[in-house]
Image 1 (cartoon, chains in turn brown, cyan):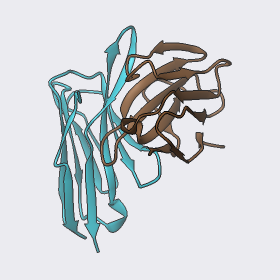
Image 2 (tube, one colour):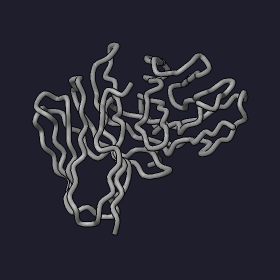
Image 3 (cartoon, rainbow over the protein chains, first blue to last red):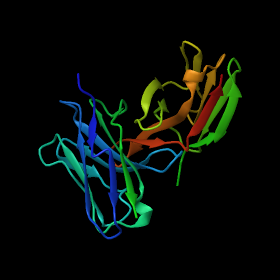
Length: 112
Length: 113
């Protein structure tokens, strides 16, 4: 079956622009996670959804970051007024059980 | 702040050599996973260890969970170029009413043919 997909794979934004990153999880997976990963580093937790409920958003670095999963499937991570420090790979993962996460390929965001 | 520190951060070895990667924390985890990530892709789960002292083997890879469930190691025997990648440990523990996963700092492995 299809794995987790993310789009776009690459995004270049000028500082101050808004961006929206999409995640299509594996069908039927209840849990969905967003992570931010710097080059060569481990992923840093951003937020967690169980179905449509956002149960943990403690990792979102500022109020410019917003995530939603309105119907409990597709999720969107939105970053408003992008800054250079937002440049990173944004990973989405889904899971049928909490500890077994399946990752998408990520979206590489570059803010110029 | 990373709760899980991995060492070494970088490792470049010749094909056929053995290596060990360490994952250490001051926190106790209910389970610990190891992932491998290749450039341009997301991490892929290799193994999950749950019991303190547990040892799991996956072909040439041996994973161990510390007795106190605070640390783990990954040993690779006779490394091959296909083992090249970023190795990540990830610990699961209860936080805010659910099981939260925290990733380690990563170990970048290069195996030279």
